[in-house]
Image (tube, rainbow, N blue to C red; front, side, top):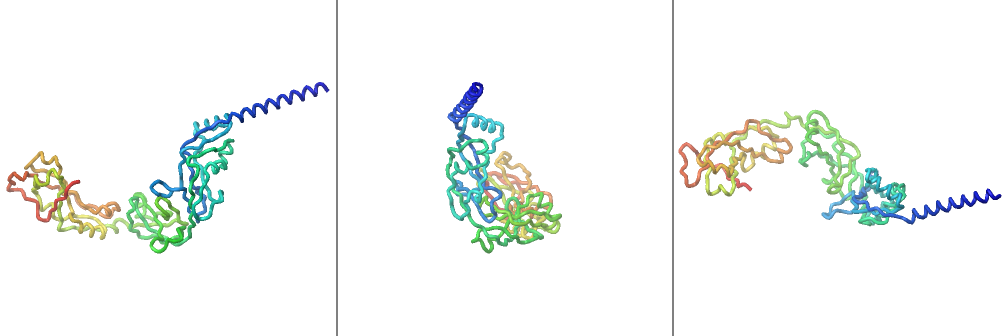
Length: 362
């Protein structure tokens, strides 16, 4: 009987000691501030819902928001463990918002309590911590219902220049778009990089079109398409551009003080051999000047001396970017002299022809 009584006393003492330790541990709650925590819209969101989390100062909608800080609270031991996780890179700062899980699916704007949202996250619960504060502590969640519609597929390069295609199969696909979008606005984009453009000229390239809901906000179409571009030899034709117009590019330091005298004007304004699409060739024909001779300020150091410089071919940039126009000859080298207006021009030099233009440098 005495032994049992002693055993009970020992057990009571141990249990009381453990309770004191647990209470002491809980009483010594600490806080930990974590920065750059991100809340992103989950990838698994219903495709019929367009979800954004507030907007930037520039008014751009966004699907991810960065929190300046999140304050975690817990026992000293739990805080120490979490701090070690952060230092070891084992703490993920990314949290995903699923409107259906949060029971926020009605169209319109909703205020999300960030601290409450994070407290419900499995990762925070597993750490044995709680979130007491977040900055910002509320986020505006905007939800728009989308409708599935048929959209036309259009192809672009990385600079957003439209590409001429041989075929797109299928030419239109189903995609979720805002209900009010109709007519010409019903389009999906496929962007091809340079490698894909080269490949598409040999065989079909498969890519999934995307619909642009807003700047930086896209939604993939339901299926991929196969894109074929025209083969190089069919796409570009050889042309000779005649009646070439010459322009001079020179700065204000030279204008009105010097004149350009051409030694070989016929070579500069003869013909230009190019390879181009018909549209690019027409655009080049309509350029104000087809070739440019750039005059540098340093040329003033050689007044009257014969200088040499390759012409610049003034191809329309939108067709250069889409590889629809290129030079089909070696660049012509201009021979010229820069003469002071007070100097007498040598007899063998020819002044700038009438069909040449002066293009001031910026």
